[in-house]
Structures are given as structure tokens and as C-alpha cells.
Length: 109
Length: 113
Image (cartoon, rainbow over all chains, first blue to last red):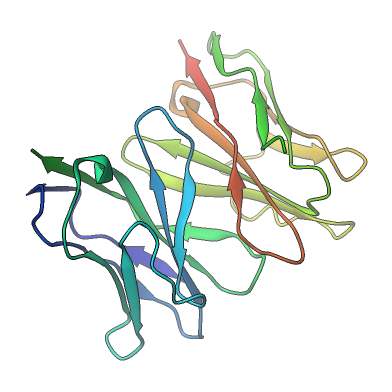
């Protein structure tokens, strides 16, 4: 069965510092990987998807199939990046999402 | 356009009562998903509807949980004989065939006393 692991429940950095949110997955096939973000009192929303390979709000994520990882990175964190971040796996397009437990990122001024 | 909507936003019920949670997906979206967000369990998949296909119910935690989708649009999640461990935020999401991003609703916060 598929599984997504986010080892850090809490992550705190200072504004302007680099940030990396870790995500590892286990799945025998070739899944689709996503990062979702939930800002305070807002609904869960897609941040980025590995297939599109785009940078959203300065965040990037590279799929490493050898290490089965999909870490989220940003070179210079901003206070508005403070939120809960979820890594998610999808077996095939349109199927259900399997989420990690989430990482609460706090960017301090 | 309007996003996914859910009602009620909050529901407080007594243990043993039945509750119904409603989800209105984005117009034209063929797929609809229910997830549950609770402390200690993270975000769990419950059930998934895709067009006229049989739903994927593999995530429902017990036979007290059921869901239906009428006319390929609105969905209702029903929890019978609620238990305290059912307390959680229930999220609905929908997606289209042309773009598989799942758009989430604001959730219904269920509290079972």
C-alpha cells in the first residue's frame, strides 16, 4: 500500500532563510506527487504538482525516484509562507490522494 | 466561479445521533472526494465518486458511514450512531476530467459530545 511520510511535524525558520520540507513516499509504481498548503483559516489548496515542474510562490520540489522523495524547497522564506504543508501521492490521475501528516511551517520575522 | 461549498460549517451533535454533511462540487466536475482531517490521524481518504462508476468506498472506517451523490452533482455523507471518535473536520473536494487538481471545500467541523 502507498504511504507518505513527512518526518517533521513542526519547522521554524527565520525570514530570508532557506527552507526545506521533507517528504518521502513508498509506492511500487510511478505515482503523481503533490504539495498542498493550508494557510490559517483558509481551505486546503494545491501548491504544486511534480508533473508541471513549475515554481509557485518561489517553492520548487524535485521528484527523486531513487530516494523516493519529493522535498519542497524555497531559498528565501517569507513570513506569509507560514502555513501547514501536506505532501500527497496519487496512484493515477483522478484517483484518491494519500496525504502525509503535514508539516507546520513557521517563518519568524 | 464558485468553488466547492460544504454545509453546515459546524455541527455539534450528541453521541448516538445521525448526521448528514453536504457537499456542492464545482459545476461540471465529474469527480468528488470525501476526506477526514483529525488530530493524530492527519488527512484520511473516505470515499470517491467518478461519473457514473461505482464509488470507491475503501476509506470508509465503518458501516456507520455512507455517502451518495445525486444526479452526478451534490453529495451527502451520512454518519449513523455517531461516536466521539467521529469528531473531525470533513473535507470535500472535486476535480474535472481535463485537469485532475482536486479543489477543496472549507470543510464541516463535526463535534460529537
